[in-house]
Image 1 (cartoon, rainbow, N blue to C red):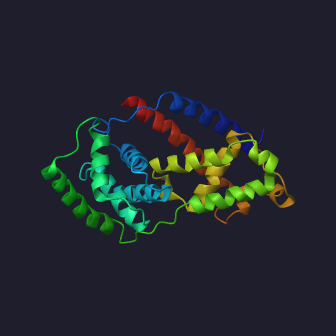
Image 2 (cartoon, rainbow, N blue to C red):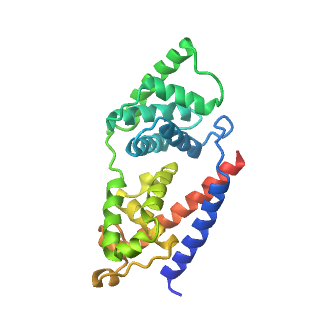
Image 3 (cartoon, one colour):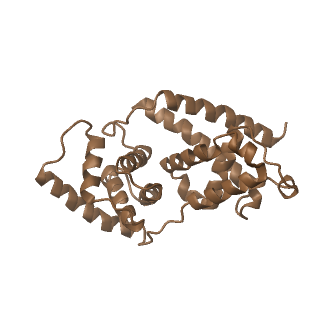
Length: 261
């Protein structure tokens, strides 16, 4: 058995098993009991969904969050205030029309589920804290707010896969849906900071085709190499498989964190 075949079996087994657990048991996180890097990122994603923010806004906000806590401590800076601040700044950078009032109200509702909205004095106190935290966040980011996200690369790579596989094979499995799910889930992890967006996109698509047992061998050019090495010079076989394994591990860690709450 080749190393590629072994990797494929690992992906199919572990990813399918972890996703089945996730589907059966995916309760709301109690953020008052679970303060961690993962829960802060999950908080941003949950708030983003409730605010109907674009996927690019949520991804940008999560990237800000992970960059902030590369140098900051969870003990020193409240992750949920920073999370709301990341969403607020990202919404402005991505031209997403989200009001600061809605970010505060949704954020508080996610933390204190079922409780009424803040009264005026606590609301304005929170608003002032968020505005002050925005400047702090921008300083931590070095005022570099535009993020090169992997989404556009993933869409391009999906089209390449479709061309190689042909419409019949491509349409027989939900490649687009699963790839889009994974690219949103991966922002729970600081892995998004460690690799170029092109490599992340190739690894996500590699995971998807392995889960579905698809072998990409539709042209002589692809047959001569691992298919993803053709997409971008950074997409070496070693690196893409390394990131693929880390994404699978992320799902295992996610389930253990959810179950521990």
